[in-house]
Amino acid sequence: MVYRLPPLSSMRLFEAAGRHLSYKAAAEDLHLTPSAISHGVQTLEEWLGVELFIRGKRFLTLTEAGATYLPKVQAALDLLARASESVPGRRPTGRLAVSVPPTFGMRWLLPRLLRFNERHPRIEVTVDTSQRQVDFSRDGIDIAIRMGRGDWPGLHATCLVREKLVPVCAPHLAPTIRSADDLRRMTLLHVIRASEDWAAWGTFAGVDVANTTGGLRFDSIQMALEAAVSGIGVALGRLPLVDSDLAANRLVQVLGPPRFCSTGYWLVMQRETVQRPEVRAFCSWINGELKSSADKDPSNDDSLAVHLHAMA
Image (cartoon, rainbow, N blue to C red; front, side, top):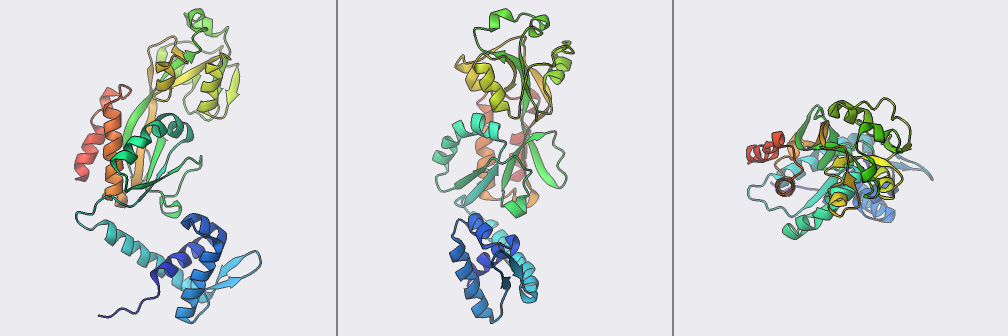
């Protein structure tokens, strides 16, 4: 059968413009210029012989033909993408978009990412550190690393590592903190967004922190830890995020040992992307990184390895 098809590249540009209803947003999505999106859509319209958009000075609206055509184009592109990804023996050579919390990305993932690039130089990795909850299909995200308890309905989630909490401070302050009573004389550094902070640590450690709710509050773990490094007060260290600070003696633990949180970092993805070679390569790599580190919860040592075996 001879297929009479419009230019596939033009269909891709139309899909992005129709999804965003904006040439500018479509251009940012595809790493092109708005002019390139506009010309591509015009090429498709000329091939079809029908207008797909109503163009205003500050808006873009689908015509009736465009609104009818868009979901069919999306389904066709999705089918082509899935068919290409499922080719037996396909090597990991494509793009991989990873969404990760900012502090985890900066403190844990970034220092190790070069090793992934060296192992898989043909995989183009994009790291998204926005605070919003991503939509995998809409935002083009393949893998998300998320903090939580694994309750993401409809998604495939595997625990990477559970956080451990332990108070940390600058080295010169450590000798003055021998008990929970000493904490009450210190400035405590809180993280507003953290689901488990000082109250949670107190519960896990069996320490009364009822009178230690004062201090300074920050909207990110990174800020709180930097304040602790500067000697401003005592922060709640989160392993593995503070591993490098502890190793460099920028921070030291007090009132240990570390206590496991009820939450952890999870590898989250759509079920249909599990078999993508790029996804499998990333899962295998991050499992190796965690195996070589001492910060992993022993009760979860084999969780990701079992998951990877099941994917084979």
